[in-house]
Each structure stands twice: as structure tokens, then as C-alpha cells.
Length: 269
Image (tube, rainbow, N blue to C red; front, top):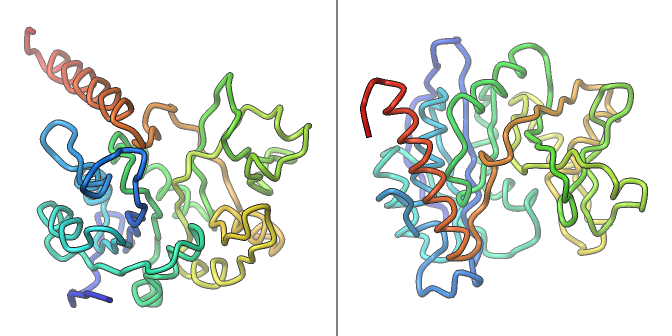
């Protein structure tokens, strides 16, 4: 199924066009719920709704939603924020690069910037996304949002040489030396729109899980002598929701952030 709405490509205040692809096809079985994980709410808005809202505020003109379970309901939820959202169904789970390619039709339209986000990371901010887009405007081909942690086990590691990002190694594929790296992949990316499709189509599946990892475009781009950058942001912005406990944690963080914003604006609480 490929549900599309036709809309003209729009530019933001920088004069650059932007497509945001949001991956929202996961089953979310650890939520132990009768509905898609991304439909669960934080502060009255669905997880995917928060992600769409941040993307639009960062200047996104077009949103492509890659869906699976509860496709119609997920699209309807996203459309409350971005009515012209396009929906692409992922019928097989073959990895993140495969998921992005489900939105191939959107990728071929020639946007200047492409953001790839996850539908279960509701704390990402427009400011962080705008910073990543700014690096694309400055000449980067790929920008990876990462974070540092004292407990990196389970996360993909950002491999840098001479200050440049050259690869992302998934935890299962990392060497003992690489496992000691504490600069980790947050999953969110910004990609030069003129190179995005070529880079993603070059991804193979020679890894422990036999999947097509979007993270492999870092090594591919580096091998083509393209500029690849790691952008460090606060780990809290990248928290993904997989369980009801994590949903409660994210709700608490959102409320704390909002209270701080209101108090800085002069509200007593």
C-alpha cells in the first residue's frame, strides 16, 4: 500500500527544501498493547505526533511516514500535525535502510535536505534538527546525531578518525576496542538530498543480523570522500519509547521541560 497526497515542495526561511522520513513501522511488542507503539501519548499527543511537530517546526516542508501496524491510525495521528503527510507501508522488516527506501518516491523529488527520524523519539527538538540541517547547508553529506554515555553497551558506536566520522558499528558487530567507545549513535540523521538515494541504495546486509542498516551510509559516504559529521546532543533528546516504563519516563521528562520553559517565561508554579 502506498498512500500519497500530492503537494508542492516548499522552502523554509533558509531557502532550502526539506523532506523528513519518519520510521514508524515497528511492531512495538514490548509495549504489550493492542495498538501501535507510536500511537501511545505523551502530554496528550501521540509519540509520532511529537516527532512530526518537531520536524515541521525545524522547517520541514514534506513528511513521509513509513508505517506497518495500524497504518491508517498512525497516518491519521500524524496528519493532525501535518495534514499533507504521505504514507508508505513497509511490508517486510529488513532493516532501517530498507525502511527508508520504502519512501523512495519521496526521495526522488530532489529535496535539499533529508531528515530520517524515528516515530518513538518524542523528545527530539526543532532546535537539534535545525542544527543538523545547518551542517548540511555548510557542506556535510551526512550528519549523525549522537550522545555520550558511561554505559554504551547495546548502542552503535560512532567511529572517528582524525576528527571525522568514518563508520557506525552496531554493538553486535563491534570489536572489543570499539566497544570501549562511549560516543554512541542516537539513530537520527540528516542527509544531503542530492546524495541520499545513491548512498542508501549502496547499503548491503553483510552483518550479524543480515539486515540493511541505514548506519552503513556513513562508511559509504566516507569511502566516497564526502564530508560526514557526528553532532553531539543531549542523550535525553534521543530517548526511544519501547515499554510502558519508558513511556512514563518520557512523560516525566516532557513535563519537566515544559515547566522549565514556562517558569523562564515568568510563570510561577
